[in-house]
Image 1 (tube, rainbow over the protein chains, first blue to last red):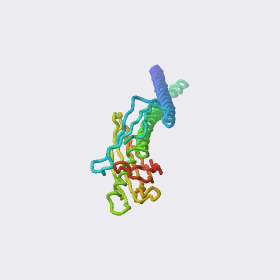
Image 2: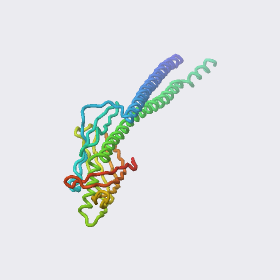
Image 3: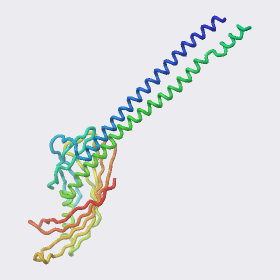
Length: 107
Length: 194
């Protein structure tokens, strides 16, 4: 009877160690994952802030040739309102993009 | 008797450490899950912020271009010529330009991925009046005053952004070649509401 009880204590200890090991592993994985996600979020935020500053200062890199933005009115608009177009230049400030009017459109 | 006491003690503590370990497991798992979800939320928020900023700068880009078209391009000229035409078509030497709303769509010659639903509204009102410039041989001058609200809507990755800009125009025109008006005036951006 006494021998049996000692055996149970051993099993109990082994299970306890296993459970503690699981705790440590799970907690470590969760902490490492959280650290990795936080670091990525910080990196993204810093990159985004730099990109916003570049856009505000129009310091982006021009991409491709001239493009066009067109404003089209509905058919029943007064005769004076025909399609209005302007040449634009696309610029990139990773991860953002924007465009600026190249010059005043000629109508 | 002593042995009996020892056996009893062992019997009482049986499973206690396992139970404690299980409780600890639950607590640590809960803490780990909350830390992980906080990290995931932080990462998700930074991604959402990129979309939000991009939507804003897409709208700003459209506005900057429309602003140039209004101040020195064909959009402003269309409004001026429309007012001029209103006076020419009216009786007398003055015409009130009733508030008119003109919806429009905006397009780029090369579509941009994830950028959609670009449109807007032009709401204008004002007046036009004619008078003779006695210093220049009674040359007819048409004075135009306009107030224009330019609304723009842009959607980027499902994130809609909108703004309304108010402009005022004050200027005059003289008939030029083929009776086309030659303008002398200025558009002023009064304010922008996002």
